[in-house]
Picture: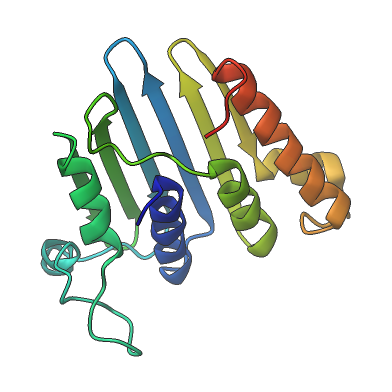
Length: 184
């Protein structure tokens, strides 16, 4: 995958398939150390120790429509190519956490891509789930929590065009403020 936002989308889709009702997506940048951490945590069905050993094997997939699963292996490869790593923890009945660490100064670092649209799409296309998106850069941060949005909006659905536009604009504006005007 050419953008890390596509890896985030893939892992979040895995969380949805695992029955998660809450998916937390965190992106933390530490510019002085040239580090980027992406963490996705869910409260889905979790995995057994046996399954956990297999999920980064490209020839293992739970899908019945194909015989290979490349999402997590490609995410791991993207992290390791920068000298980083990918870790997965999971407990059956509790959920799963995927954490990827990247060295952003490395020549093989893949850009984040359009994370703003990815998060907006996940929220607006999965209105039966809750998402908590946290983004931080050095000492600044912001978050979007659909549980809070639902309280504020009342009966107005998250996939209403005006709400979708507001979510996209808010995430984009907050990201620009964090990144000094630049959005990936």
